Length: 175
Ligand SMILES: [Zn+2]
Image (cartoon, rainbow, N blue to C red; front, side, top):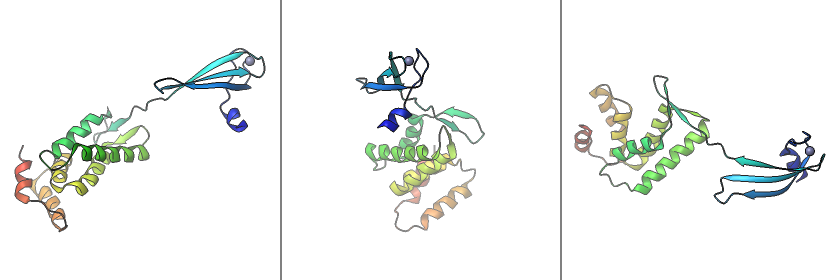
């Protein structure tokens, strides 16, 4: 405890010595702030410090290098569009979002590569639903020609465990 006390020690605003003791610690009712009452070991006066978590404003680095604010809703919209009329619950979509965000948080600090987000979403979608996966991938990867799209389908075809209908995929893709 002495170590901790030392570590969190604050300079006294009165005498500017770095030798205080925390006498009381309280968390605000909404949990958003911690207030510490401190007593200076040098001049004996009291002061209070406040701690607030700093929200990390994440940014997404797009392919062309431009940066835009990270928008969770935007990701979710893309997912929902891909999962439209599939047997995928809101809970499954929420869980997928959680997994993607965990991956983002453990890999990047403030700036996230847009490709990383897309790839992670595809990774989890592929396990969840093949139709949703191809819909998402076809939009995300901006297939430039039919060959690319067919290549993607062929890759999927190599996995016999997954069931999907080519007719359905192609029909759903028309915008
Ligand atoms: Zn002092």
